[in-house]
Amino acid sequence: MSRRSVIVALVAGTAWLAAAPAARAAPPVVAYTLAGPPGAAGWFVGPVTVVWSVQGALSTRGCEAAIQITKDTAGTTRTCRATNGDGTTTVKTRTISIDQTPPLATAAAPARPPDTNGFYRRPVAVGWSGVDATSGIGSCTTTPYIGPDGPATLSGTCQDRAGNTSAPLAYTLRYDATAPALTGVRAAAGDGVVTLSWSAGDAQRVTVTRSPGVGGAAASVVFDGAGAGHVDAGLTNGVSYSYTVTATDSAGNAAPASAVAKPQTRLVAPAAGVALAAPPLLRWKRVRRADYYNVQLFRGKQKILSTWPTRPRLRLRRSWRYLGHRHRLVAGTYRWYVWPGYGRRARHRYGRLLGTREFTIKVRRTQ
Image (cartoon, rainbow, N blue to C red; front, top):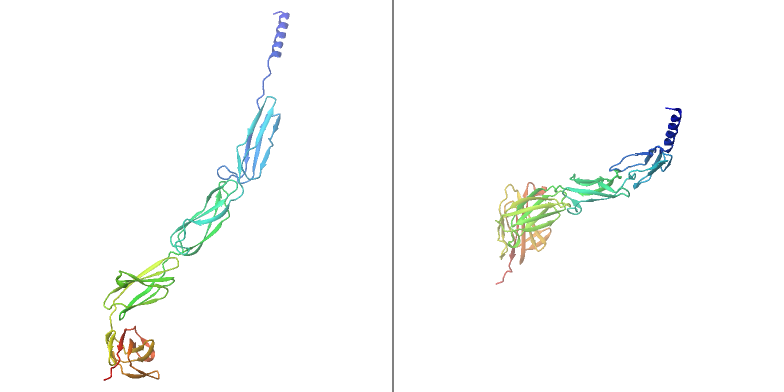
């Protein structure tokens, strides 16, 4: 090739190179990381630092190396915009949610009302509720209570959706699932009467139901109140009576016990309510091991005689002295009582009342 040809070729190549477009640079590369204490469900529970990494940029906006978010927020983002001569890259962070404030437990309530008088007798669940300003309440304590008896103080908390836990909140309830101690239930039969006795511990009330009941009823309540005994009078001798004694405490717990008694007359004569013209011979059945008997005679509410025969009989007279006063068996209605006595009279050891009856002295007619 001649020298002229070479020169022409070089000039042509240089012209082509000058006419070809220059190569484009890649857009900037932007990345970030989030640094902060993690909570639950994507929440942070403390300040969050956004750390940006930018490569190949001539200028940036919002791309500081470390940006710290310190306040609670239900959701926020940060944006980095990086530009070079051949383009712009914009990157937005994911939603950043921060809740670093614990919720507040505001109330506690049982799942149902008390059983009786503010007391619970059966297991009950107590649930807490609360409020949270940012992430909202996620859950609160639910505690079942099954005992022991007595005032019980429970404690519960609430947790927000971010995982923060509230301060504990106390709740007190009264619990009593134990029936009162009902012991010593006895029914002692007398003449037309049954004497009931019991020990009821911390019972608030005692109810006594008798069968057969009053006035032909199958059953009747013959006692309802406080105390340790009851005298059920006006009964029919020879009839067996069943009693159910139920002791109930303030919480409504009930303890039942049963007893049976059959009234029998121990008084022999005179017959109940008989009208007499002469002083009667009072007679009653002998009591085993009794050393004497105490016989008391009343006219109305006044006691006019108390004496201690050793045999199961006493002949009344037309007049006698008692406590320094002279008394006469005048016309009217009289009631007499008999108790058995044991040992020396000075010891005053008496058994249960054997019975009581009335008789009437008629007006004596003059001839």
